[in-house]
Image (cartoon, rainbow, N blue to C red; front, side, top):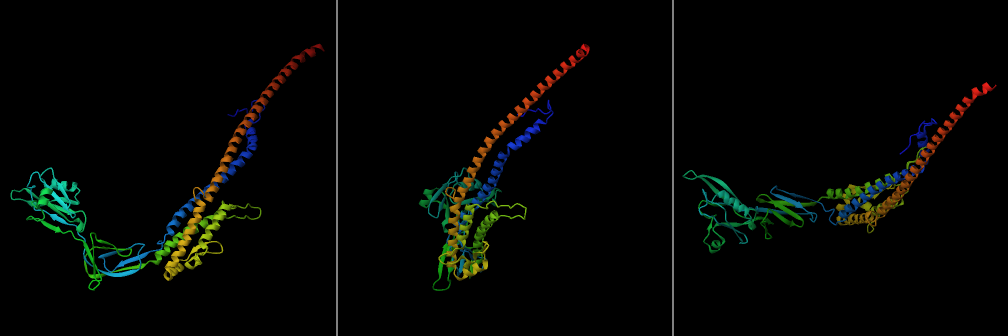
Length: 460
């Protein structure tokens, strides 16, 4: 803590005087702090660049996949058929006739006020012949529906109001529906236990008077090349036919007696967008490096401003390696032939029209060149940004180590400056003390001289 001695004896502004002396003493520390601040800015920008590189590694891994440019448009001549093309699809066209859609079985029992047997026992048998016995806690139709829903038999049930009987008691029907469409969801519901079902003595609730099968379990069915000797019938337990054509799924929503044309065509615009987006990420990275490496030369008498990456050999090598990865030929084919090029100023650009034209002419060649570029970009980005061996990572680590060393020097300077301030405060405190003593002595001598003065006059 500083000692305030201002004006005690000397009248000097001691605090300001000490502060001025300390400002001079602290110049080396200030220079160290400025250096730390400068290194902090460099580290922050290097870390941002490293993060961008790591993101680019992930993007390049996706871009290097052999089907990354596989994009297709799928269409149907009728809304009865929806077409979905996957990356493994190929241009194709065919006609299908939709005979029927997949349906889930629904059974409605006869109307009852309550279940006729107490306690009630029901058995549901699925398409595989597996039995599920259900023993509700009461004869209530609603309670029976809840018990069926809780049994996990692959069906759902509900009690539906069906008017009143002759005595005015409310009647209910038990409606039971399969949880899945198609023949795999077919079921039987009997009154009786599993043994009675196997013995043939249980009552088939769908066949008793007043009951009905509202919807049978049916598979969806379509026909290819209908009406020809090559006609082929396909079925599906759902309304989706997976890989009807290689990489092409169709989903039917209603029957259609007329043939429906299914068409799959290459979507070159979507492929160009995929390629363009990847190239744009690389271009943004290179642009950021260029902006950070630019030095602004001032006019005469001014100060030249250096970019945060100016003079950084690691960043300069990264810029050169990334540019080479994009522009060097792949198996003798220049990337510029598919619209990817770097001009004389080092600006990376993508020509969508040139890419689309090249894709139409030779899609396999375009895919090979694009994959090669993506693989080289991934290798370069990983070489610099790897968390363990990356050259840019090592550069960041080195800068951080230097900052820690400078911070240690600042800590020592802080201790030295504290000691120096304490020394100055003691020195000026002693000065005030000495001045006070000298003033006291002067006052004493003056008083003695004043005391001698009258005596000397009397002697004369």
